[in-house]
Image (cartoon, rainbow, N blue to C red; front, side, top):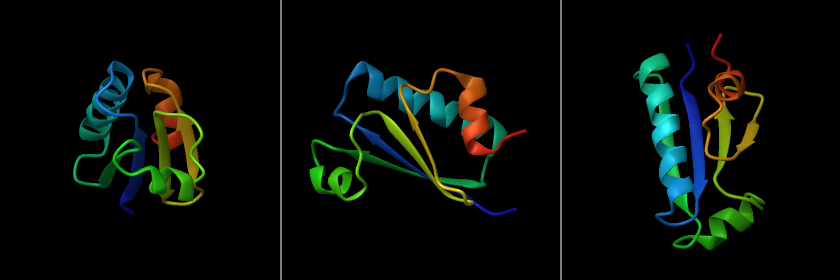
Length: 89
């Protein structure tokens, strides 16, 4: 099984950012323990990263691997949509 490579763009320590991180980690830890990597990028601390990735809204989850690349915007509270984006059956 290929490792799922994830990148989550957030905006500081806001409620939406915190919720997105918690929702994502909770699902990944229960469904893909040891089979994913997660890089959290704060666009306030690293605005160039968001610009380079063409991120226009946050929180934004980018699934880089396995292909196809997927983008999901929001606090990631919709578990069904999150599971689908991550390819979890």
